[in-house]
Each structure stands twice: as structure tokens, then as C-alpha cells.
Image 1 (cartoon, one colour):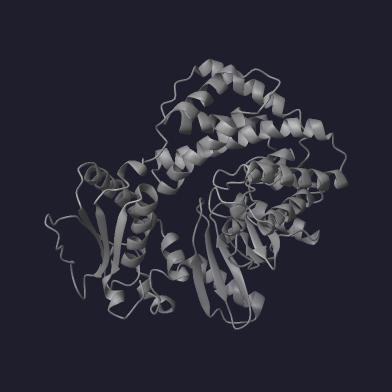
Image 2 (cartoon, rainbow, N blue to C red):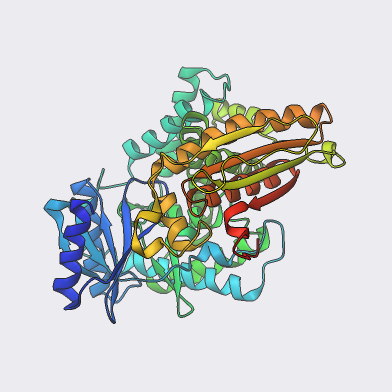
Length: 481
């Protein structure tokens, strides 16, 4: 057990008066923070470790302030700032994102109502929560000011435009950035800006939204956060629902402060644009630069949002070079993805297996050509070494969270995808009928099962190819695959 886990355990036991009976690591998202669910006999809490002192301080001080005002945030139970650990209320696992219908399918009233509840609470957080807030603890900056905006726009320039090889005139684009930020600052920027207000940072507990991950918050305009939620790339919010939820949000804002609705709406679309550019920059960094598949797959969704925005946005300042770049992005075919329809009748079946080096060894390939790939997962930290995971498999959530929290597995799978994808594309083109991919670990129970499942899912989603998935050791136990 690492030192910060020992510190969390002590915080939990001091706070709860109970022994920490179980500690499960929760999957990381896009940050380096590490989360653990700690359980005692009757109480549970979320332990967090983050080496960035200032970020921790911002989150804790914001949370204490908001919680005292009765706003929907987790209670901070205990903290050890100098050691980078703190304990907060366990809000469960249900994110608002989990309630969203599949992309393109109708939205029902229950989901729309969750969005409406979320934006009502957002307005409270921004306006009432922003009153008397100590903005001096903000990290990395106290306000979403011109400097912050330029950071986001340059992030988009360096990590998306340049990596995607979109040609641009550096000086002309810089001039547009200056004009654009000057325009955005016409909005009232004296409220709390959550910064990453999207459906994965909204927990649903007992039918009500609670907010997490606002440690990057600062003073700014109201429009930014509601733009973040409604124009989240993979949110898939239909235009009619965007309008309905936005109007509902404005009604709540109107109850708290006086606003010019027409001016507020005009400014809103400027903030929609800068948020979408920031998202493209993030997807460029994580996807084009770090080659992480999840972020690569988000790029087409973000581009669709840009295309949608270009159809209606009206900004009363001329931004010719920026909009020329956006038109080039929208018209480019480099992010369109694989043409599944072209190979809908392909004979190819990809056989994906998990196996045990210790018990069975390499699976045989009965196909005519044989061959394929064998990937060894044994270098990845083994959940089977821990008592709480020994009777679980790579399909159980605690094990999945453990493996996803370990950067080795994520990086390993990104490399696997890069290798296997090339073979699949080649075999589809050449009308081959078989490819085998095997994942082995010590017992064929945790790491190899998870890796095989992830590759199978990746191949079906990206290529629509037929996949025959087999978990050799688990299926010996009459396991239903």
C-alpha cells in the first residue's frame, strides 16, 4: 500500500471511528488525481490523492464555502493538504452522462428534467456560490480573463491546428484571437465559473444533481458553464433540448440577478465557440499527440459541433482567419472515421481470446493461415495479488477501475489498437476471413479478460467487424460470456 493510501486510511478511521475494511481504486479520467472508495462497517468516503497543493487547496476551500451555503457539492470530511490527500462525501457512481440516450436517439423527459435541475443548481452555484468566495485560492488563475482565454485559444492552435496540419496565417490568427477575447470580455465576468461543467462531472444521487471537479474554477462569465454542458462533444444534446434547457437556465438566472436576455444570449454563442475550441485543443493533445483512442474518437463529435455553430453563430466582430480555419476543419475528411458500410459484407472474423500462461498457454489457431497476435499483460500490476479482487474478474467494476487507474493498461491498449487496427484494415481490404488476437496473463482472470473485452469493443465500434470473443479460463468455470 502506497504512503498516500496509508494517510487516507488514517483520515478515514479518525473521521469515521471505524476501521477501513476495504479500499477500491476508482478509474481516473483526464487528470493525474487518484481516487479511492474507502468503506468501513457503516460509512464510506472518497479518498483523493493529488500532488498539486494549490489545486487541492482550491477544491477544498471552494467546497467548504459552497457546502455551507447548502449548494449541491460533496462535504469535505477531512484533509491533509501538505500530504496531498483529502476525504470527501461518497456521492455514488451515477454520472449524468450515464443517463444519456445513445447518440442520435430521442431524449425523454426524465433526462431533460435532470438537465434542467442541473442548470438550476448551476445558476445557484455561480451566483450565490460566487458571493464572498475567496478567489485568491484559484488555480492556476483567479479569473477567466484575457490571459486565460488566450491560453485556451493557443492550446487549440498548437495542439489541434498544427497537429492536424491545418494551414493558417499566424499573425492573422493572432489578430483574430485578440479581437475575439476583447469581445468575450464584454460579458459580466463577476460570477463563479465552474470551468469544466459537463455531464461526467455531475453526479446523480436520489434523483438530484451534485457537482464535482470544479478545482479549476475561477471568476468569469455565466455563459461559459452552460455552454460547456449543452455543447459537450459527446453529449449529443438535440437542438430543441438545448433551447429548452437554456431558456430554463435563463429563467433561474433572472430570479437571482437582472439580465438583458437578448444580450446574454448573443454573448452565449461566443462562449459556445471558445469552449468548443478549448475542447478541440484538449482532444488534439490527448488524441493526436498522446494517441489516446478515447480522445481521438471524440474529435469527429467536436467537429460536428463546430459545423453546427458555423451555421448560426453571429459575432459582431470580424474573425476571418479563425473562421477560415474552422471551415477547413469542417470540410476535411481526415477525421471522418472508417467507412463501415464499405466492408459490411466482409468475410473477416477477428477472434479475440484471453488465456492463462500458467494454466493453458497460447491458444491454437485452427484457421488456414494461422498467425495473428499474442499480447502479454503480465507486466501490468496484477489485481489478483489483492484479496478484495481475487474472486472477481476483469469484467467486475472494482477490477475495471483498478486497471483503468493504472496508466500501464491504458497505454498498453493504445499501442495494441495501433497495431491491430492496421492489420484489420489490411485484412478487410484483402478480403481475408480470419485474424486471431490473444491476451495472456498469469491466471487468465483479470488483466487479459479486461484487455480482450476492450479490444473487442473497440473493433466492433470502429470497424463494425465480426468479433468472436472467448475467455478460455473463465469459460471453463461455466462462465456466461
